[in-house]
Amino acid sequence: MYPIQLKPIYDKTIWANDKLTSLRHIEEEGYGTCWEISAHSYCTNEVINGIYKGKTLMELIQEKPKEMLGEVPFEKMLRLAYLDAKEDLSIQVHPYNSYALEHENDLGKTESWYVLDAKPGATLVAGTTTRDKSVIQKAVEEENLEPYLRKVDIEAGDFILIPAGMLHALGAGIFAIEIGTNSNTTYRFYDYNRVDAQGNKRELHLKKSFDVADFSLQSQKISNPYMEGQHKILVDCDEFVVELYDIKDTLTLDTEGKKFHTLTFVQEDAKILYGQNSLSVKYTENVFIPASLGSYTIQGHGRVLVAYSKI
Image 1 (cartoon, helix red, strand yellow):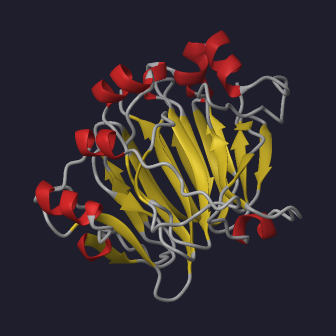
Image 2 (cartoon, helix red, strand yellow):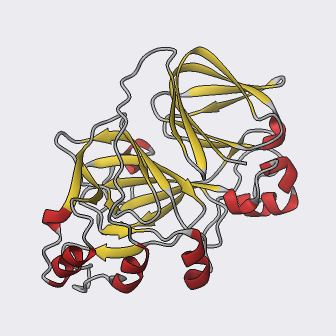
Image 3 (cartoon, helix red, strand yellow):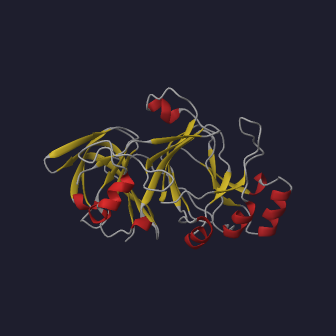
């Protein structure tokens, strides 16, 4: 096996900015979301390099589960996507596994955000200022939820975990990579009374949201100024691990044949060396490293995020 590059899948949203599309020289506007690594029934990326070019990531995992995932079950596959927000995203909550499997035929969702860029004064929502469900219910009925949203100041380099059950929303002017579990189930809790291009308000999912919401949940951001040679574990939860490396010349990692890695290049271009081969990668690119690859080296200067599932 070899490091796998994938064709991004762009989705249009009413809150889209143009940061990512400008970086990638895409002329069409309105793409707020881009699925970078996905093997989900909603959509799965196409391989664009090597002998498996033209296959989808889902097909490749189904054909070669051990080589691709190692000891990680498919249910613990990760999904990576960019969010590029010109406006505040709707307030959302994700279900946990048991609820999602029963009601959506999908998995629950825990995710994390690493911020590549943020306008001055940008904020995101991570939890509420009250644990009292009745207070939140009344606020929703009165369309006055905003005073109870816990706002977090955010800037480039910050990282935050968004567990299942926590109300959350990315704020205006933030460009982030989302690293999370393999789910596409989102319940929209509040949408600032916005309308779409046809003048219609978007659907809310209040009953399901209240079924799964835990108003005691809050997350703290982790700030990450660049430091050459730095290594940090940003999160180590039941679902996945995300590590940050500020590379000085080279970084060698090893899947040990047990688990796949995902790589997100959040600062500079770089090169992946494996065996006698090499692969050039660009800023913002995400690469899937199959479990069977074993040892590989990242060559360059800059920051990379390495994510993998817990076995």
